[in-house]
Structure formats: C-alpha cells, structure tokens
Amino acid sequence: MAKKKENIQDILDRINEDIETIREKVEELESQAEDSEFEDEDEDE
Image 1 (cartoon, rainbow, N blue to C red):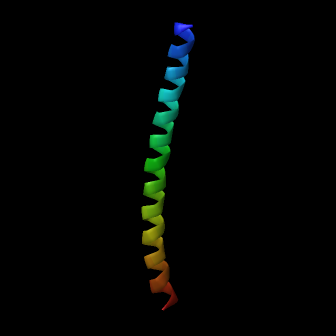
Image 2: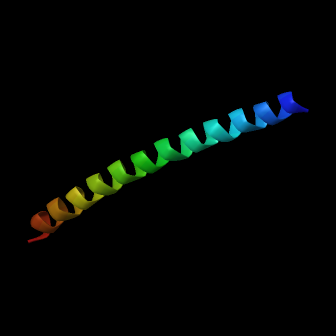
Image 3: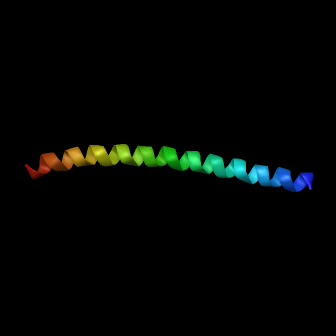
C-alpha cells in the first residue's frame, strides 16, 4: 500500500510541475498578446 501512495504522490508532483509550466507559458503568451494588441492599434490608425 505504501508503494501505491508513493506512486500517487509522484504523479501528483508531476501534475503540479506541469501546471506550473503551463501557467508560465500562459503568462508568456498573454504578454505577447498584449504587445501585439498595441502593435495592431498603431496599424489601424
């Protein structure tokens, strides 16, 4: 039973790492989108 709990904890740790990576990527993409929005506004004028 202890081994199964360790495996579950390992899986949860990997999921948490993946979530953190996804959050970082989302922040990066949001920053790029904000930069693009400003560029688009300049092109429309």
